[in-house]
View 1 (cartoon, helix red, strand yellow):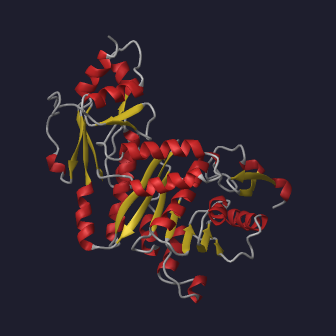
View 2 (cartoon, rainbow, N blue to C red; view 1 turned 90 degrees about the vertical axis):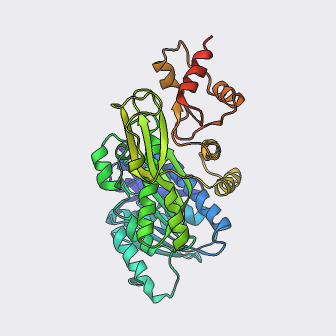
View 3 (spheres, rainbow, N blue to C red; view 1 turned 180 degrees about the vertical axis):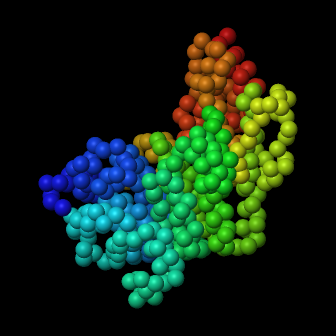
Length: 409
């Protein structure tokens, strides 16, 4: 690998090399070393999340696993921008990626810093298994399980979730999981979703939220198999991926109680009615509670129907974002603020452009005005980070349609 084959890029506080040939390539497995510029916001938010976790839940030195590191940009940014890292595992199965990681470590003068850096070229499941069973090079040290694990694959994370939970600290561990197979989670490929995530998706205007909740349900069930529960700290969608940050706990009664967060969404394709049902699929009605239609009532699930964010965690991230030097500062502030606003609202959201089209309105009312009208009528309403053209509210869709029609008078 010659320097003329590489190009220097900067993210946050970190400079790093990628292959020249990969710079303009469409992100795919065929790249020499995978790199996706659009995932920079994922890395930005992950830095904020790890620092928030360190302050709120684990105020000690951190052991981190970046299991699919590619060029190493995420790992090196963690080293440069996160506090209190004791040790970091930087791993990728691609030998070209490992060569590039070592080059980028050298570029950032990280060979002699106090942080222990362990670079490996392994399948992520093998690495997790070795750490869980205390095998491999690191076994010469008597150390606790990692506090933070990041899984960021090209596609589904389902193959790695079980072994990752076996390796992670089971009380107050931070699991960070990305899914980029959004067509599967959003209901475009329903059979594949059922095979990969054990749940039925639904292709509708709020598919992004349904996909995030299916992913959360899947992560929670795999945690349960490993005698753990999870608390979602932040679940966010951006562009073409979903990223989940969740905290582990180990308490049988608390795990059993968390089953209340499992359920289904019912949706009427005739009138747009939607609602959530706790746990049992047998509770799904035979006809739409809104229009009494029997033919167009559908459902999604099982999925997570509880809260998908933790407000104190997000507030801490917002404060850290204010003093950070990341590139997507304003965009992240907006995303996190909307996440706080949407957290206590019912499942699903209403896309005002699509509703206006269905109602054949001459213009789309301003979101801010619609939210104010809904609040004046005594209902809750907010923006949602899942879709900037949509609102969340606890009012019935028939009343929302009337409000939209009235704005044209």
